[in-house]
Length: 150
Image 1: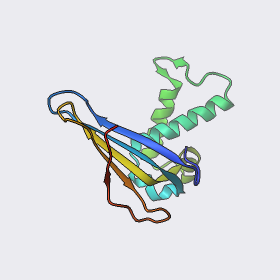
Image 2 (image 1 turned 135 degrees about the vertical axis):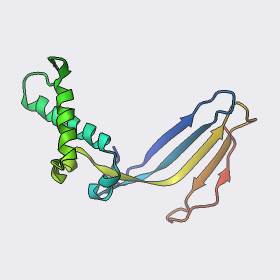
Image 3 (image 1 turned 180 degrees about the vertical axis):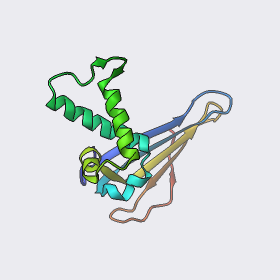
């Protein structure tokens, strides 16, 4: 989880490094995170993500308050499956409060200082490797710089 002004990084890769027209794109970034109000972004979060996160919180709370195992099989469905179904219905009927959402979900904005993008395939002679960085103490980004692939 992000922490205010603590350095963080991420790596995202997509694609397949295989012959016949496939490409891999990899992004790496360094920066910090700023906590943002959940109300700013909750409308853009997919319902299935909210359902699964809130259901997991509810199941954890139930396990803490109930001595029996929340995940044991009851008939053909687990208790957790029941909690997910109830949560899905609650979300569809607007029966999940903002307070409950805030107790289960935190929203953070990643603010990068530096980004790198590598793109390549088995058909390329070498990876295309670009660096994007901001001027120190500024929101202005420098012109991308070509890096050696490794």
